[in-house]
Image (tube, rainbow, N blue to C red; front, side, top):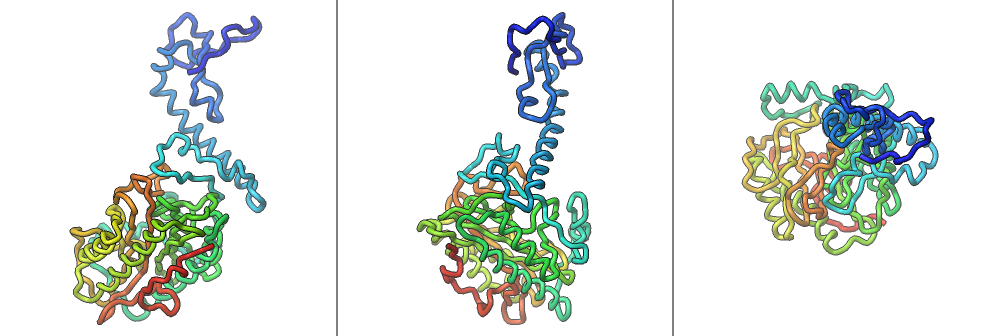
Length: 411
């Protein structure tokens, strides 16, 4: 705690000690202030001694949570008032409150976020869209029931195919917005508006309270980066992860873009991530064990001296955002299940230049590499056919993945 000045005019009333159990004769002449309260929009809290401060701490610290919420609300209001016109730079690039005390593993820092964008009421939405906690009751029921991997055919498969086609169009537009000087928030705006224009709900929005319509993961961010006012820089690699919900189905895909003059290691990483997915999809056909994809991915990653993230995996998708099967990307995993015609799922290996290990920022979403090295990823939604696999989120005129550095480069 800091101290009040030693000498005050005689007509100034000294504050009382904030420790309710204080019995000191100087309790009505407290001279110490709580340093945390001083950083928050709270009235100062005074204490007559270090001992009183320590004694009151277990109870007193609870008010700091309220103060942090109030501070966040004030910051959000300032940003909202600036919405629709140029947001002052000091607001855009200031750290969120949690980040002022966080020990980051790499050089990337978060910025402030714009207000959450609104989906018009006429757009059909998944069950979690309006849930206060963003919980999907249908996914919870599905998980508890132990449902077998769903087989999609006929009209149901066509609805999945349409959702994936919309997702591809939206990602292509988001990718065009990815350039030096653009903000991740601008990519979110483009993706949000493109989804709505196509009658789609942007699936990430409010999924377990995720606040934005797309994930933007820059440099050491592995996945689930929240779009904010961070300005994309020359040499950055940026992953854009889009999922669209339309016709009762989700379509999920992502790509990593090399922005401006990316160094050789960064370009190697992005190419490796592409080839890891390419290798896995080449192995998809009836009879393939889901667990066997990890060995294919690991072999490619190892040839580039890269590592495979183990925490996050591919997943079944369709009428639910996430369902069975689980599709791990690392070798010697214990995933259950055998591919069969009509199975719809994502494969989305996350590849790191350094260690495979990850940590999560205190925003409770952003997963980053534990050693601060860069990470890259590509993702497709696929359906198993009688003879192999169909990439439902494929680029136009590219039914089979083909590496082209220009398609993944932005200026």
